[in-house]
Length: 115
Length: 112
Image (cartoon, rainbow over all chains, first blue to last red; front, top):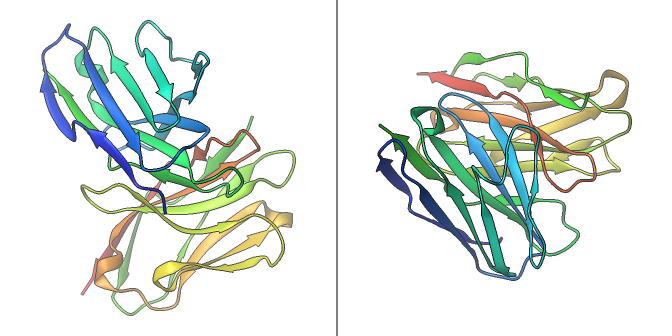
């Protein structure tokens, strides 16, 4: 299975600041996905990150709030900008292994608490 | 609208008892279907998946799931639950976008 590493694993942030989460995959992948899991909730897709193009955002998520970079086929970052307590969530990075498996692998997530 | 529904928010079973977690999907065709498990403080682990073919799929940890097209369902089962199965279980589907739509999750509690 693919190994996906995320940093930081957790952080406590102050209101109004921004934090960048890094996601590293141990093999080249075409598509990477960022999800948010609010406390006690399910996973919601934030955006799809393709290398060499702008990320595609889901309804309710905008680039100014969640800018994403995808500089190569093994790495992506998600920034949570101008944070408020409502941004306190687990943010998960995911990717497919190979092109056709259809199976998503997930990192262990980055738990952010905004005070 | 495309969606995944897990009608049971919380289920409690006794250790050794059988388990069935329900999942229904709403989509105009047959999606790819998945069950993931999330243990406290850990990431998501894939239990099993259905793409096509045999409607009864076997997964890891003794889990199985049955796809029923007529009911738009993909219920997860285990004949004998272990205390270590206590976790949050998510049903998910891929409609071809390669991203997953998740259900709201079912929290499983196992009584000794």
